Image (cartoon, rainbow, N blue to C red; front, side):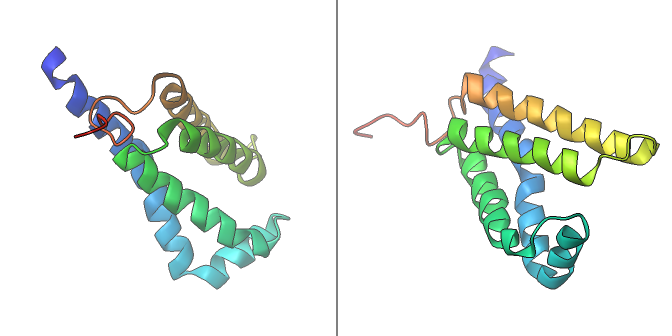
Length: 129
């Protein structure tokens, strides 16, 4: 089983970050709709550009394992804040589940902050190779 650990780590990074890459692409595809939704929750639409850069760039960085700890920390903070802003109607079971999902993802990112990207990553490449 231990021989599979590098591949399991890679798969874990891909699965954690894939949602963010997809979200970034969706935000670009429905830019005005996303900005309108953000503004309806009190978040200035001008923050959509940095949001796209973070979720898309951070997601890709985690997938390839480059600056993993840094981007995992940023995405953990972003995901917690997004959960508080967009999923704060705890009396609604669906919204509560979305908030708890966000917390679980924050936990996964914090795990990456602590342990890094693993063997199959740009962070772990050997110098001179």
